Length: 263
View 1 (cartoon, rainbow, N blue to C red):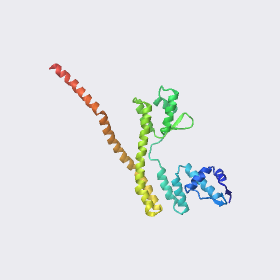
View 2: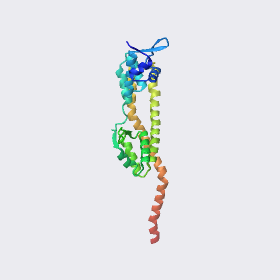
View 3: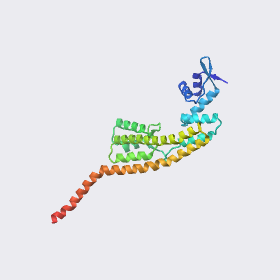
View 4: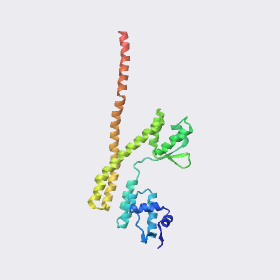
């Protein structure tokens, strides 16, 4: 079996020394055999390192990779862990991404704007994740066509693009807080309980975790939709109530005026 110093291992695996040390710190990679003060790695380390790289490339988190490796090493059913991972990484929306050209974006959001302003707005749109560069500079992937449509409608209604992007960022941050509260709730009262009860997560625990995450999907929408609807009702009434009263008073005065003249 071949042996490698850490820099040789990194080169063979297409990784970096820094990554190898980080994987060891996270418990993903076993420590090397020490020969004096030199750490020596072997082909098993190389295979493990390549596996970690592939899993990271597929979008696996460090926590999931650790669970997979632990399950494999202790003889557990890796399929159970993969089932949980699939639930965790499946998209939460059934929306189909779309594509849009640079000219279409410019025409919809920045008609008549200069090149510098358009470039600045486009950069911010990409930063917010509303569009993603496709690589050719002319086409862009749209993760959520619905969101882009909302933005287009607001701009068409006369709201400045900068204000639309500002509110998009604020709403995104608000939604991140809401998601964090849901995840924290489940982590504290489900995931942590399973770990505390058993001392180590079993196959049945993993299945229960996966089921709970599946259950969260419709529950989140069921909670958020009515709350946002009620909040919008209250906000709109509060914001426009005074104007509505003024309009009613004005209409009442107009309707009463002819009667007074006739009298």
